[in-house]
Image (cartoon, rainbow, N blue to C red; front, top):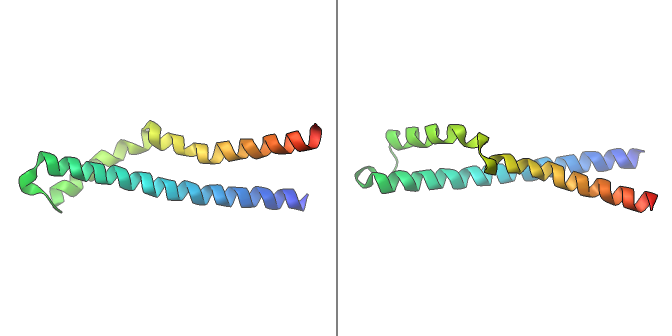
Length: 93
């Protein structure tokens, strides 16, 4: 029973670590895309400015509701389902 508990804790910690790393990476890609969009639309104001930072901040507000952001939850779901399937297959077949 303790082995199962250790497995659950280890899998959860690994999934949480990968989730956080992927979230940071995807958000940074989106920020870069928005900064490039600002630079293309305003070539005279390219570079760091308060208006650009405000544009990026406002645009990132709704990013957590996008499909790409929501699909990150599969990091928790898919490995858990795979492990449950393997445990079922090994023990009850």
